[in-house]
Length: 216
Image 1 (cartoon, rainbow, N blue to C red):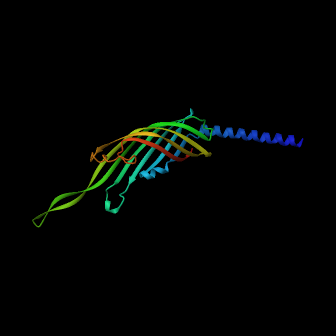
Image 2: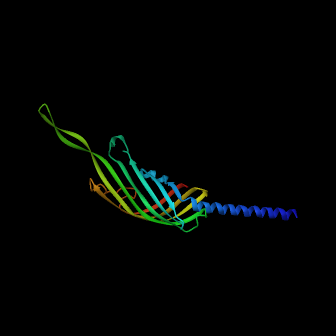
């Protein structure tokens, strides 16, 4: 008899726990609609990326990922050569293939990228200088600005994990296409940009992105 009573109490406990979990998942689906994430690996590109995701009732999301670029010269000898400021971002549409109540969710994502870079190079210009009636040539440093525009589409598949409620780990991989052009300054600046990490690269790029974020 004691065994039966104990078993009934245990089953009632499991039932109440299940209802509480379902209620918690339902509440999370209806009220927690925003995810703020960071992608740490973009520091290798002298960039900071912040992802802002808006969830919708149909299980899809819209992701806005602004980027900010700041690069200083690699050495004192370079002066301002290699200095760069930039801004850009990506706009994605994410389609999940699992319910939000599942802590492990797969998805398909597609979107567009646009980046703008302002590169500053210092070039010496020779000008005439007249002192005491003697004309000489003097070198003068002058900043030369180069504007680079980069844009293209992205397509990826990913996995979104929520090991702890409201904490997101996101990993996706895919492929993108890039086209770059110089809007002002030295038009030949990007001619040697053959690496996928170069600002002026044109071609196909692989996408592998790791993110961590918080759900609100």
